[in-house]
Length: 251
Image (tube, rainbow, N blue to C red; front, top):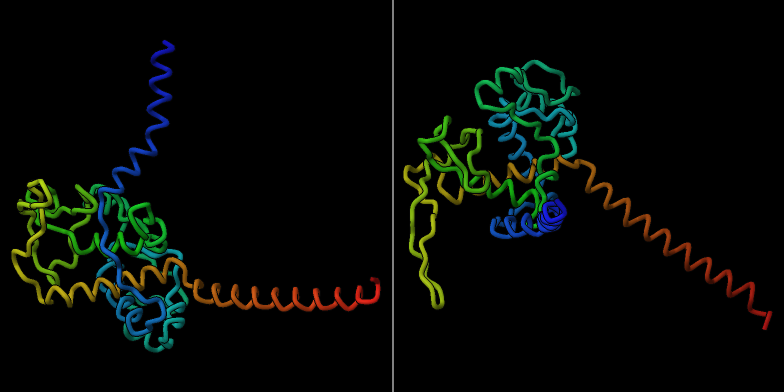
């Protein structure tokens, strides 16, 4: 009995290390995003509304927050609101969660903070999303016909496949110093309407917006924090000068 307990405790201690090892094997591509690029954020918002918001909700984000990325109320209403909701409403989805679970095997998750929740030892949440959205491939064994390198056996179909095209997973020989091994690599089998670099740019814009959406006040928070530190340093300098003035004649 004691041996079983000891073995169980050892396994519990090793779990974090094993998790880190699995994450270390997953190589994420760096997401080339810029949270200060308003044009990129606007393009990403349009892609999100047109392709993601059909199934996924963003229940903690309001349409009128898009004014922070340079859009006015009329532009939001004309280009990004298609369901008759008000500009001040939350980005909810009309899909019934029960039906969604029946169709996809699980209800599509809310995407408001997905860019933050996917952060790991392997990379940031933006890196995970950027790699994930570019590594779908055809897999006839899956119910949707699609699989993903980053998220194996994913239930979500590749909604951007017409833009990217169809990728397949092929075996390739990889040679290094003193070794030769067989690896699986993605190859574009059927081109989409966008060139590979154009699709990568579209995904980068989408991830840029999703990163912004996960923390809309981040830029303002950083600016306020810097001003706060500046004020603190000024007060420290004044307090030190005042102390020197008070104690000048003591000695």
